[in-house]
Image 1 (cartoon, helix red, strand yellow):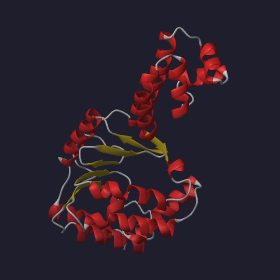
Image 2 (tube, one colour):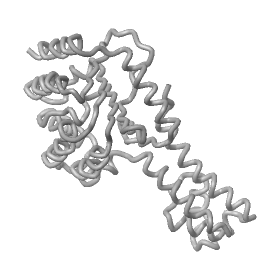
Image 3 (cartoon, one colour):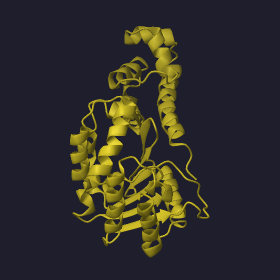
Length: 282
């Protein structure tokens, strides 16, 4: 079963620091020596070597040059960029509001052919109605203290979600039953959202499964994750989005998705669960 995606991101960052530290040792340099050659304070060398501070591309080039290993700079920079993009805090992603990230990720949605989505907290973005999305994004904005561009972000989210109806895309989506009851918007918007789920279930490119709260399961409830083909898995935590691209980790999440699917109901039983949630709003 999946290990913590946060631990994976931390390991990737630590691997870059270890490589830089190894170059310094191979060159027979102390932290002070390297700092002098690079023209920065020795404390910076220590912070980078211990993985406390994240090196820029320029820092890596200077480090490699000081160690006589210029030929390794490009490879380490690539590893550094991959590790840096793997773990990105929501406050950083949303620093200018939420509209931009929706627009930025639209190409990923457009080129993905097979989506596998597991949601344990809220209805996935591509299935959200405008009213539901507005309630959710307002709550996120208030909690994070980031700029309020909710109206624009909702429009961008709706535009990104056109992949549900346009192009050659397939969606396998799993929801925990509890998601149907979490009121992240007012009752009218919640009703509209649940009715929209019933409508979406009729699309031939969508397989919507619901895991009943009392289902016997082989995989415990996990953090929400989105798998884009077999190329990337985005995991959502409270503080950050973690993007996994290594084949082994992607395979593990896809295996978890298969096992979670075994606990889900579809068709009429799933519709009954949604109808029950709608009735609970009355």
